[in-house]
Amino acid sequence: MKVGVLQFFSWPGRRADIAAVYERALARIAIMDQTGFDAVWLAEHHFSDFSVCPSVHMMGTLAAARTRRLRIGTAVSLAPFYHPLRLAEEVALLDVLSGGRVNWGAGRGFARVEFENFGVPPQESASRFRETVEIVLKAWTEERLCFAGRHFRFEAVEVLPKPLQRPHPPVWMAATSQEAIAWAAGRGFSILMDPHSAHREIGAKRRFYNERLAAAGFSIEGRDIPVARLVALAETADEAAAVARRGALWILNSYLGAHHRPVVAADLVPAGVDPLARYLDEVILHGTVDSVTEQILALRAEIGLDYLLAAPLSHESFTLLAERVLPRLL
Image 1 (cartoon, rainbow, N blue to C red):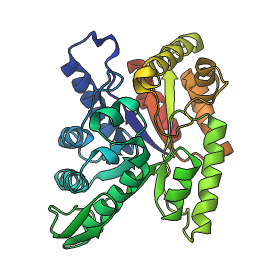
Image 2: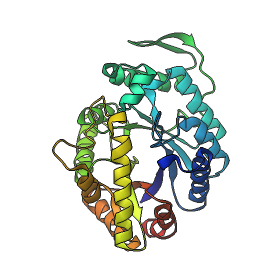
Image 3: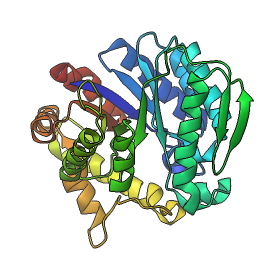
Image 4: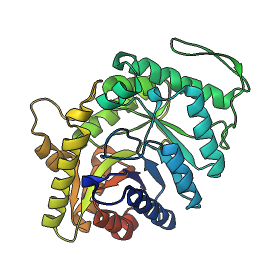
């Protein structure tokens, strides 16, 4: 099993200096490089202290400078909010500077505050996202880019640098809804699976992806499909449950609160379901080292989990994951 870390940059209560948020994350990334983690995947968010990393490409450059073998993933570059040529340049530059260690994850975004303040109409989010992804891939692989679409038009523009990895870095699309999964599978893209769906929902979505991928003439063989799971670890089950509860409330009060209320389809919390109970019972992996390891191995057997993208909900959770859970999974 591969294990990566989904690295948020939370600033709860704004208690510490904001620079400490970044230094703590970079210190963790150095530990990941020295242990058996496959990759760090950097989360991009804007206009919220839920996660204060507005540039995963700039942060990725720092992460690359402090590591030697760890792959640097974006989870995700929020494609509709970028000019596609600038996005192509930034990710390619990161790939060169990291020695060819970039995993590029692209996503559509769903937070109201981001769409409103970047001036992107929500009804254009899907078309802008898909067009931007197409342009980025063409910019990386064509000597001079020619493109005519709904939102952008380019004529024989040379985009530099080209990525170090050829033909380009491995690519994933963040996909939560059936529509998004079907689109990604139909074009042969691998997908990143979100941290907010219940375990059984992840299993159903993965089966749907496999079916649509095969129907489009593509194979699942050899693909990494990272499944993001929130993780709360502690020395006792009660302590871990308390961490999980705080983490769930943190998500519900910020990420899914009024300030970030989704403006595009995202089944993060289905209607009629108690959101706190759902996170605690069906979404977050929480417990002791032995318990959480068993839960992960059970998911491997039940839904084919072979790439765990862990999002630790506390410093202790990360430490126990790195020192005691990771060796059991590798």
